[in-house]
Image (cartoon, rainbow, N blue to C red; front, side):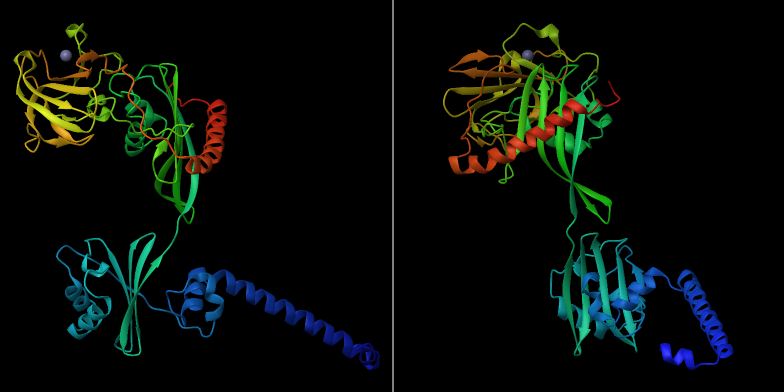
Amino acid sequence: MHILLQNFPRGYLIVIIALVTFLTLAINIQFHTKLASDININDVMIKSLAPCNISELPSVTSKCLTGPIIEDWQKITVQAGDNLSTLFKRIGLTPQDVYQVSKAIGKGSALDTLFPGDELQFIIANNQLQKIRHIKSPLESLIIIRSENAYHAKFEKREPDIRTRFVKGAIKESLFVDGQKAGLSEQKLIELTTIFGWDIDFALDIRSGDIFTLMYEEKYLDDKLIGSGNIIAAQFVNQNKIHAALRHVDGKYYTPQGHSMHKAFLRSPVEFYRISSKFNPKRLHPILKTLRPHRGVDYAAATGTPIRASGDGRVTWRGNKNGYGRTIIIQHAGVYTTLYAHMSKYNSKVKQGSRVKQGQVIGYVGTSGYATGPHLHYEFRVNGVHKDPLKVKFPHTKPLNQEQLKEFSAFAATALMQLNTYQMKAPLARSL
Ligand SMILES: [Zn+2]
């Protein structure tokens, strides 16, 4: 090259250098203009995907860059009353196409259950249906592809990214109100009360100043929140007593020591959220005090609010019982009985002698018997002796075994540390 340049007449060399520079600049400018105006990122994606099986993920698209065919997806939205035949007809396909596609996907497939508002996407080329795409959810699509004169169906699944979220709040009005202020959904609050439902009576035990802290999963897809996942760890400081629960791989919750949160009795026979919305926020104290002192606990709730069995057992009484009105008594394993009074009606399936499961609805709140307003009167007896249902110690169920405990303990220590670090550092929700 050097020798070549030396042998060139000087004038020519200058002209050539100028020309090359000009051409380089021109090409560059043109290329950049094209990038900016003509090439849309989506086009690039579609082109690169085009010659491949559409069901292949973008990560393998490098294999597919063989030709610039743009796929022309036609979209059609499902209306009320639509089925495959009406949809196919609307887009210009024949009953024969419906038959072929139905044959490929079989009975009970996603296309049998189309809902108004669902979108179906089609590729029709040379008067021939090539592909159908039904995006069932951000995580799941059904793709039907024609090859060798037949259609083949295939599900495409995506896994969401799981991220951990921490939430902390303090009770000022009620768990329902303050939980939502702290950013928890109604669903998460119900999950939280379910986890601690054997230890804390969320209808009567909650006090101003109680603190809850949660660590739970959220599902993201392409950086967009698409749903929430499991509570991993939670702590509830109720009347200065700390309750902590951690989720084990079996999907159940345990104390940091590996004892099951699940106990033989639920603390409350009425679900907190059924009453808390009607709850007077200034009175975070046992309701209907005028009826005290007596041998049970009263839950003020609207007539018709479901009452659930606090533990597994057998119904030994169902009927009127003087001032108690419509009453159910359940005999539980060992020495325990529970009594539920003032019902407006019974669950018709629950009769004298019936076996009932913990949490099963046995009847509904009312005013039968001597009752000044609709409420449930609830009694808890041990060996026939009345105990305060809010204070009685419930028997523990089986803890994790040695092997399970090994796995659980390591996880529990880390999760608790994360939760506590967050709890100490994070400011409380603005509701305080
Ligand atoms: Zn009572």
